[in-house]
Length: 256
Image 1 (cartoon, one colour):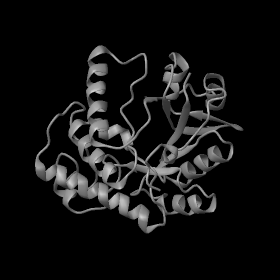
Image 2: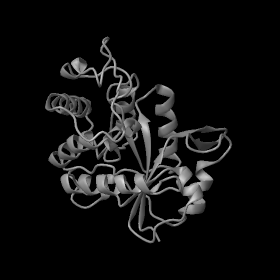
Image 3: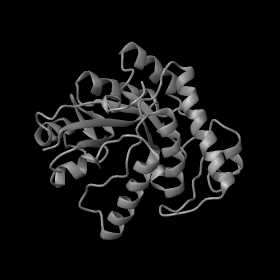
Image 4: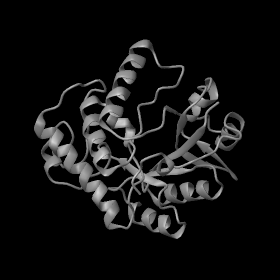
């Protein structure tokens, strides 16, 4: 049986609507954690809501390299990351294994800028993950893992549960997660989506993170990974009954 579970809502700060959906999910004890997009229109409101609802220690950084405009200058010159107009337009292959030093340095500067903006608004991220899983690209993951270690916070591992993980994907993710653990900090043992939870068997132990994208479903919550009329609330209650829900800040050795 899973020992503890982190239910993390991605995309906090994306918009006001997204912010209030996530806050409602916290209020209903549906989720135990969320990650914040520092370059999105709803960022300032999300920070204010974090303070109002006393969610410090439950909000991480949702590192973004794929949507909107960057917060730093050097990365805007990287054509594999940004368009000529300066907007994010990531062009790297999912299994790309190498990036030039200049590109890696620009990515680290952008990560530092997004982290710093959180600090400037009174929020120290509890952990780091990324929008559209960009840190699953090997050289980006190395940059993010090293940064997370310096900050003393966990980094989400690559999704390692799910029936659509072919043998090549499993091998890649196993190697990537080994690398992220080696370079980074404490993390959850298993990572899945609500759809994986719906279809698959649970591991026999350890800490599980469920990557959620909650949405309104009348008086309930759905999720972007599920069918439009499927309840996230019911799924979590059915598959994870009596499993304590925690935030990443509850993991051993995390600096708060």
